[in-house]
Length: 150
Image (cartoon, rainbow, N blue to C red):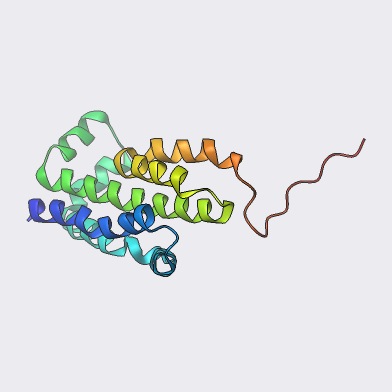
């Protein structure tokens, strides 16, 4: 069952990534990706994998050791759960990047590679976005700090 859920995990997230990367300005993308619930299907897969194994998972996450985590992730269920965890969080972060970029007016040509990087190497995509976002205007409705008065 873990192999099936592993395969299903990215398939559940891929349509949302496709919308953000390939059709970022389409009105339906804003309607669909605007909801944080886009991560719910992936989180459900995670729950199906983790909840039955909670007795083995809790000791590893409450008092983590490298060996304990290695053993847990070395199982099919553990690896599939870790994959669902990564895909769910990467999608949530990618959604935030997409929204933040839209608010700042980041061009699609700059946003798409950042989102692809986020799909592939989540934290690096976030780091690049955080580094680049200062180049574009403040989001609408956000007031820039006033200059100090001499």
